[in-house]
Image 1 (cartoon, rainbow, N blue to C red):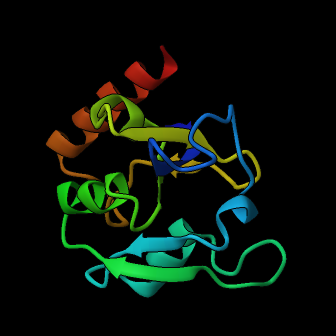
Image 2: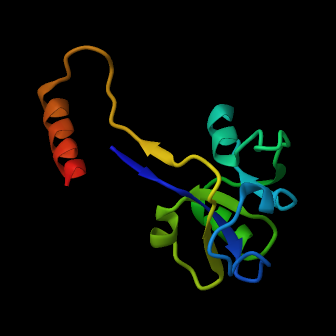
Length: 134
């Protein structure tokens, strides 16, 4: 239905904060925020683990919610990787959102259990398809 790039959330004082874009390897030495509340495959996908050079992220503190994550990142203790929409919905004067140019984008899809969907689900899917088609 939709794709969006990934961005690095950085403290405004981070040396890469002013860049137009970065490589995921540019943040390889920075501690990376992550959550232990999600499946590991999900965490690894967002963290780009393994990295293109075969290395693993430098795991930083864990977080329980977005606001907690952003406080730690804004304080300079770690960086995060998020969808580009975070820059719109979580704009803060102490954060920079820098596109990561060398990782695959997030792909958003609409799915439901196999079989004929309930009328409400089918109607919702039709509306989503129409909106996505623009």
